[in-house]
Image 1 (cartoon, rainbow, N blue to C red):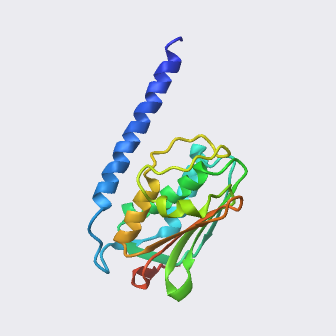
Image 2 (image 1 turned 30 degrees about the vertical axis):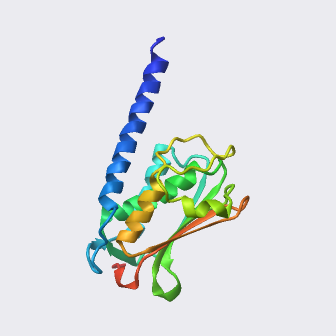
Image 3 (image 1 turned 90 degrees about the horizontal axis):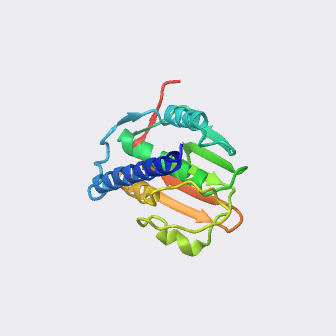
Length: 198
């Protein structure tokens, strides 16, 4: 009985270290080359996002948050699936980590300006000063905020997002106002969009 607490702590530390190593491996694989214009395969991103939301609910990670999906069910994308998954999973999990319970997180996937397919993850949490924005995609960069939930991350999520987006010749835009939440917008080139069967 007296060993339970230290064993649980050791298990948590081991899981965190494993996740850190996995994230570093992903990052090293993403750095460098960009994909050729039509490299990849057709990805049903609306289905993946819907399943991801369901998985979060079942795992309890999304407990206490309101997660809203606005998805164009006919909008697919050509790309490398595991890299696309790393983009949305890191953005959504990041929003969950850095907002208090009761926050709203919206996930939107649709055609935006100039016909580009865009993924937008937005929250109404505490936000952050604009001075942090250029640093957010650096490895291990963190913003200390006493109002957010104490869920341990590796500090590599946004660096992974940046490199995965760059690999697909996309763009990542980050905006925030203290007290008014944060917005992460990923847009892919037009040539990557595909129409899915209804």
